[in-house]
Image (spheres, rainbow over the protein chains, first blue to last red):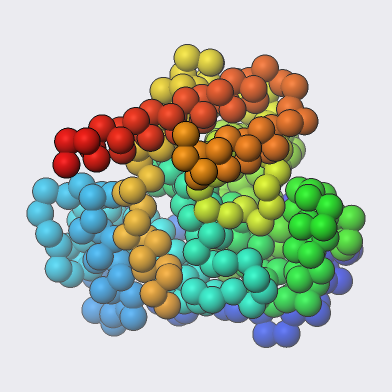
Length: 287
Length: 49
């Protein structure tokens, strides 16, 4: 994935870009090299993670709907697998890195509510079209706007200019970012995820969530997250940073198998699933 | 209709005002319908309580 010179120049101004913990890096290695190697996973879990209580709170919530309460990460990993553990650790680490307070006047709560609504929409679209990796879809949706946190936390002065123009002209944040800096939150988010070596599936979904067909062979997750973002904006849950609604790409809609009748059903499921992400929000906002 | 609902409806009208694609207009209708259904559920619950 190419990075424009404008993105490179802007990223170069970020002093000390965040890194992930060694626990997450080792978990990432296990997931990529030997996701079913339980002895390697349990060896890592013995070291422990500061996110254990948070992860257990989420795993024991109605979102996962386990039939019994789990009290240790090794028990949790039996149900959600090493990939599930990686996904939850990654989210907890992101909550920790970016905290619950904005550096501009773009509320973190509004940001996370929109992000989790997009996660719910991605999950329901994935379920509808038979996409096999439901939690990957959910996490892709949750991460889609992470570039806005990069603006907010590390390029605060520039982000304040963007927000001010968005409000002044009542325009879409993506258009404003490009007008002022020729850099989008989608590019910044993809850069951060690549910097952290997360699964390439997510960095492509983040990078192309506003332009879903960079290549014909792309994983459907790119189209799923694109459609989910428009749905989440339409449901007016949380705050995507502006009050615009971008038009979705009809090819992406077709790829998600959303005919008018299906759209009604899936949208209803998305709205009903929203309360289930409250434990995630409570963890995100408690940092 | 409460002030909150009027605000929601106005927000939808504003957000979708430039949309012409039939599937986007359908999305708007569906969101308004879901909003109305959610409201009637709240009202019914209040009556029952």
